[in-house]
Length: 105
Length: 111
Image (cartoon, rainbow over all chains, first blue to last red; front, top):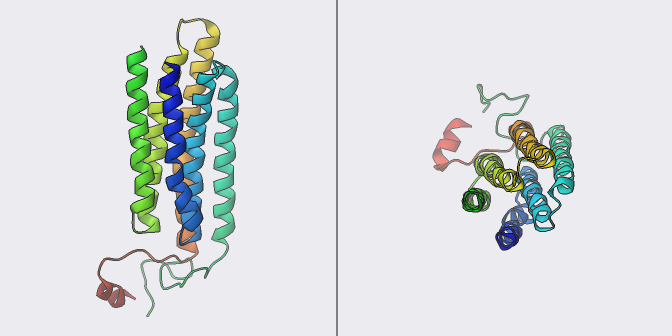
């Protein structure tokens, strides 16, 4: 049974490279935020798997819970920060000053 | 019990695979949020459900408490993952990110 957890963890580590590509080469800033968020949610599972491999799930559960909380707070903080930067992109699209119902010429 | 745990792990890893490939392959920021949310909720539900079942060998108190804590992580992610996705898309909209349109003349027509 330990081998199953080991291979699942290795597969999860390999799977993390795909959002890592999006986080490094993402064309826009929110793309990078999506990549970081996906990596964080995979790391939560990976911590529980490591705890099952070392037979100490009771200790690693607390670490995983703290990591999930940190991931959530980091995403909220970065999104609040980039919300303030209007005009970060070429803005012909709905913004707060230009709501989606009424498009300006 | 081992077979159930393995099947749950494989189903969860399948959802994680689909979510990761979707994050890589979708054309637009707004459509990339869809596989991100799916991979968070469904993959975490199945993989952490498998780990909670695995920690329940007998029904002694520490094992039940560990399983309950793992399910608490699942509940926490179920609340926070849609919130984080909504915060990211709100940041994208307010910063003025343009959505992906298939035909360019529709774009000129609308703007």
